[in-house]
Image (cartoon, rainbow, N blue to C red):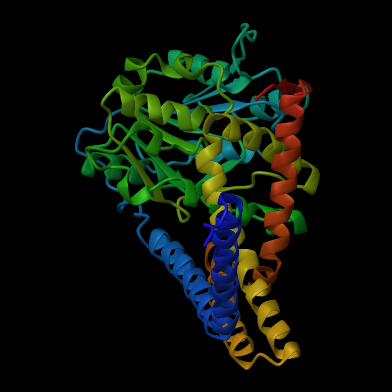
Length: 417
């Protein structure tokens, strides 16, 4: 009998492999009614765990200590950079001067304002206040860094308190910051103030933006001795820093070309061996970042472009979690409804249960955030996906403008990221 040819042998082997593949596919199809419900339930459980993680992280943010004034209080310099801030500079400076802490000086740099900022400052008379004209912007410097460097060089305090011009401090802010920094042996302390949300787009977009920040940085680990510099941050609205630590890194000159100068300053101080801490300070400081949808878009465009350039991978990972939380539950509900329409009871039950429970968890968290953190109606939680999509659009536009060489414009200055 003649042996089969090599070609016939390989053909037979291929036929066998094809039959095995068909059998495996048939088996998978047979098992699909069991696999799909389990997958949908697992996805729902995963989304609930993401929400639980967010709740845990928020609860771990420490609070400011009770205000206390030492027997020999050190001088605190309250430093306020201002550019086109006629709307709020008066309230900001008066609140700074009204501190209960006994030894303060207040210095304001008018950074080339073209509105009524200078007139508003001239109307405030107090021997503890100095209003300085901003010096010309050197090449390679960002405007705010230049103003803050001028403030730091003119300050005499042992502690420096940088405040944004759109903030309003409670009378015990300086005392609470000093007590907290001393108790926790910090070189830099930053806080998250109460965010005033006035217009529709402020309420819709800013909470998801702040959720991204809390997802990016491990607040509960910032004071650990082994924390890396890239794991710490500061919020430029309120930075309380020991003068020696600030001067040790060269002040804002160390971050002269950074749009996210607050984060980079904290990281520079941490890299030099300093201790950086954070606290929730909503009872001690409030801020109105923007007053219209246009301002929200312009301000976040600038920050998003700079943030993506410096940490795009981590930003993308954090944003993916927020997207899953916002759009995962509706997708699961859609899968459940599809199963119901197709007569697949297992998929329908699993999709509706997983989607419904994860949606309830997500909406409950968002409603609580709006109600407790922002003092807004809980119903705004329903618009969280809209806010997230809007921020993604703003961030994408900002990155495109930077990459295309157009830059983004904020307060009359163009930033290239």
